[in-house]
Structure formats: C-alpha cells, structure tokens
Length: 279
Image (tube, rainbow, N blue to C red; front, side, top):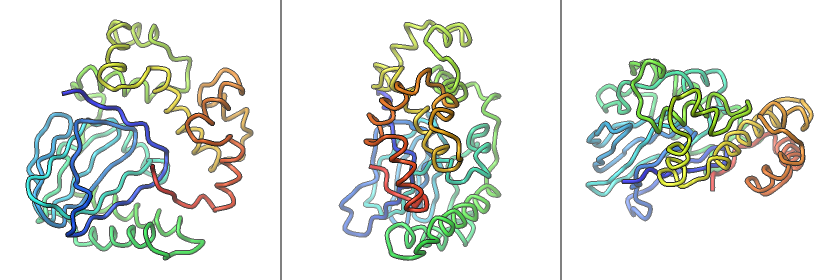
C-alpha cells in the first residue's frame, strides 16, 4: 500500500470524539513532519508505526514522532482524544523528536501516568473551550511540557542514526536535517548513494508530492516559527530557511499559507501567537 505524505500547517490541532462516533480514527499509511498522539478512551484499534503492529485497547496511548509512517484501523467503535502538533511549540524538547524515536509507540493503560488524562483534558479546554484568555499559549505549552515529561519517563528511546531505517525514511530524514541548505536530487544521490530517479519516484509515487514542494513545505514551516519567535527581518529568515531570493520565498509562502510573511507575522503578534487549527 502506498504511503501518503501529508503537508500540514505548523500549528496545533486537537480533536475529541464522543460516543456518537461521527469521525472515526482510521487512516491509511501516511507520514508528516508533525508529532501525533492519541488516547483511546473506549474501543479497540489496530495500528502500525514504522511497520510495527500494535493492538490498542481502552486507556492506551499512542505517540508518533515526526516522519514515522503510521496507519490506524478501528476494530471496535472508538472514543478518543487526538493531538497533532509542530515541535516548535515545545522547543525545549525539540531535539528529542529530531534525534530519537521510541522503541514502542504505545504505552499501555497500566503503565500510563495518572496525570495524562487530566493534562489532555486541559488541552481540550484550552483548544476547544474559552479557557486561558490571553495566556492560552502559555498554559497550553505548560500542559504539553508536563505531558511529554510524564510520557518520556515511560519510554525507551533509540537514536535515529542507529536505526536501520528503510529507504523512504532515510530520504525524508536527510531532507528534514538539511532543507535549509542548497538541496537537490543530485545532492541526495551523492550523500545517500541512492539513485536520484528512484528518490524522485518515491516522492511522486509513494508520497504523492513533488520533491521541490516537499522541500518548500519544510522551509515554510521553519520560517513560520522564526517569524513569530524572532525579530529577524523577512529577508534574513528567507535566507535562513534556504530560499535563494526573497521573491521566491514570498511566492512559496503565500501559496502555502494564504498570506504574505509580513501578514503572518503581524497576525501572530496581534493574537500573541495564539494556537490555531490545522486544516
């Protein structure tokens, strides 16, 4: 089965589904640059993460790191809480998501810290309710750091460089590490010793995205973070993330985000970088 690469906006998404079960938690094999986790409140799930299969039951937590291929299939009507988020929201632990992956992507109910459900309820209140006001971003970040602090204690990690990853993940990881430099199919071929024609095939046939569009998505995601978190000029940021000209950066940014970099920065400052939904 083909793997779909999803290009998501660099934001925070929370979804909860009650007993009515209108939105099932099922998806084909796919990957993206965001962190994804869900708590299964009721029901049963068959999932796979990087080709490892798991059977999930009520109370289990699944955590998927960036660029891990994952798929979900409900086997019994489920109720859940789901988060998809960019690692820039918690820069204090960004290196963990970049350089490690869990040996197991599932934490069983009996091993899950009791603080996890209240913390996810807190995220739900902040995202879907009217809690927090002007301090919503601070409260959400605090809840996320507490969440990951509790979860990481229950996980064993391996260094991604020591993992015998498949070709697709090897290519995607290299791009994630080097997108700010002058990156091309020729450079990937030289560094990874994989035919550039095969790499191009992986992007077009497996990930359903053109190589250049994928690289630009990584650059724009990084640019969004720098626009909101630094006072560097837009020209400096465009160079930081790998664009050769400001015009190319502005055009690529507007195509993906629906606004100019200056508009994005102004809107973010006005809203105090409030968290918004991935569409």
